[in-house]
Length: 215
Image (cartoon, rainbow, N blue to C red; front, side):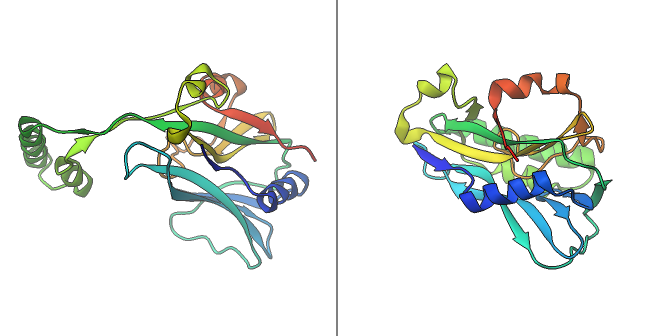
């Protein structure tokens, strides 16, 4: 089994965040910033080699570091909140595994390329991501589940990954989901919604373990 879990230095930073209110919290697609004015903590998305039967599979994790300088937001940074005390923090951990990679048949490859050309004609322009997808030679599925689930127990250790994917932060009885989802790259936000009610987390509890960080 391969483990990408927070180091003790990162856990100390999480405790610092729990016990010291940041002046501001910022979101960027690839990181969160907890801004203390003269320094900041940054939670970043990183790609690592995964335990898998397929050579190219990756595990998307997060790493927390401290920067002893003033944070300067860029055009992609969005201010989430200011001077809000943090009530609770949970480390978000999940179990990652993969299915066998399957090479596309020749008809499937042709269909993908034709589909890309039709989509380009309809849109009137080429999408770089669609072009990349149209040229893929095969497909494999990736799965996440709760680390203590029966599904996790059934996976061979050679293909198993335990990963810390971020933090769940409680502020004023709502929850900031500062964690990666479904082994996807980046912190995806829809409709500028950053905070969730506890009932919104029901599905998350089936896929992630939430480990409370004490003071």
